[in-house]
Image 1: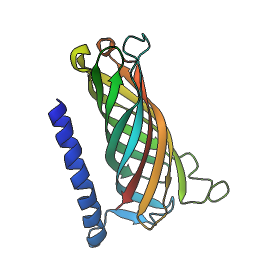
Image 2: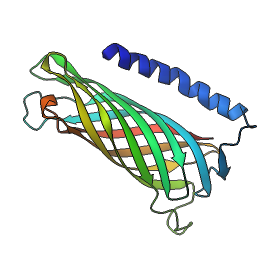
Image 3: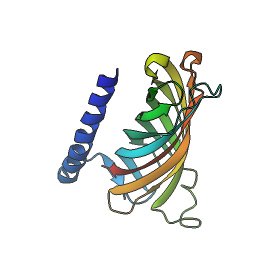
Image 4: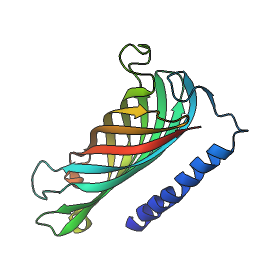
Length: 201
């Protein structure tokens, strides 16, 4: 499983810059409408970033430390208020105190993203600052080496914002919690903070 996850991370790290560069040069393909730097935009986007994960083990048997993570995905914005998104997140390097193993969390979720301030214009924030609320569900694997390797159902709750500082390229920051529904994994979930970049095609 770890080899598959490492391969997926490596492919994403190579594919995302290539995809963004290709999108920048391939202006003949129309994937979106409106000004990408405002709410008046619909279309396809891709994103990638780095994060910190904070695994939560309520029984306090493993005492996991925070771990580094990589997150990437993409989606489609249907209108100023709603987008659908697919995300993959891998949290690794969370040492387990007392077990001498590392914890790895692999998650793949389908998300609904809403922009609650889309109809406020520039009254509260500039249009290039776009806060959002994200809810999603999916599955993944919690791998604690000898302590367990279990598939799990997962739900994600995030709050964040996009900052469209260039024509098609922006930054994003979000924080939230991913619920892990599997008693065998001995984790209730993991908190996350993600910082990254996005491209609106």
